[in-house]
Image 1 (cartoon, helix red, strand yellow):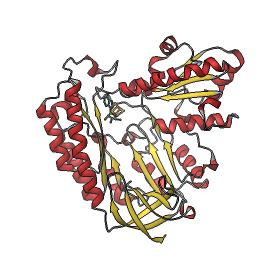
Image 2: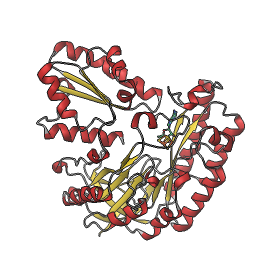
Image 3: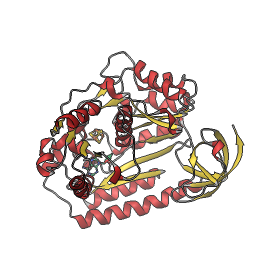
Length: 428
Ligand code: 5AD
Ligand code: SF4
């Protein structure tokens, strides 16, 4: 979501006459788009800003702005901490960025814009047409109405609001006309898409509609809250032929006791049941997840329940994190802190186990003829191209620039931790 926000920021500034530069020292405007989901992300912002201070001293007209979740959370407090900032803008103030920059250029004033004014209809900002990309994100909703006790997102991204189905279809149609073949629909909890518009449309309906758009070959989405994963959405994996066979379904922990403390509103058995249904409806579906270790009060037994669950499910991939206390969340009031040492040890165990499972899953594709959408020349070799399987695994194979944007069939010959290697069989 943040990557997409950065793309929107770049597109808006390009539309108002700015051009991007490769070397930050040449810039007249520097925007840092921030994340506040964990403490580490927030700390990175301060060290980045520290490095930029000398730029500002050398070039007094340089404008430095900070946007995103940390900016939303801190507002003018960020100016107190970093007095050489020109602009702080929140998660609902991206659209007014060009206007803010013009005001700063004219008046030299420092601006703080963090009101929740911007409507959901301004979310559709299509990126420039000439970047040769074949995949694109599309925001379908903003905010979140869940209150997972550890999570700062509802605070910084506001209440849930869906874009209208017709606006989304319009945006995807424009993207298709610009050569985009694959869209990833973005929302904190896509399963509740449509609830705020009352059009009688839900997420499954949206998937069916997007499937009708010519030129679009693949549809992905993220993220899906397990408690709201409906049977109707599960069925989409067999009914909507452009929907790729991958779901990111964050479980967070395998312990019912910790799930309760996290306010996730499902049990371990509920989650396993959803995984079972997904695999029954769509054999070969790739399932990825998020896990937090060291939530306050997590015992060895709770942690073992997470490890046990990982063994039962064998995720294709996993993002795992140490719990990080965030101001203003319900969990911040819990006193039963886990030591840094225990968190690190638990994280290492989770990551080592996941490495094993990822490799195992990747190796299972060896010998398969996989459909790949070719995205770009490989970063490691000019003679190779890179694309993804429908299950979202990266594949490199010998091929030239002309294949970019094409859907091809590749025989998987080797499997590694982070990618697969294959041989081109035919161009579809
Ligand atoms: N500490 C650690 N991880 C967190 N996440 C969200 N909030 C926190 C936190 N306070 C993780 C969750 C979520 C992912 C996007 O980030 O696993 O699914
Ligand atoms: Fe945060 Fe929970 Fe909302 Fe996801 S569903 S953004 S974890 S509050």
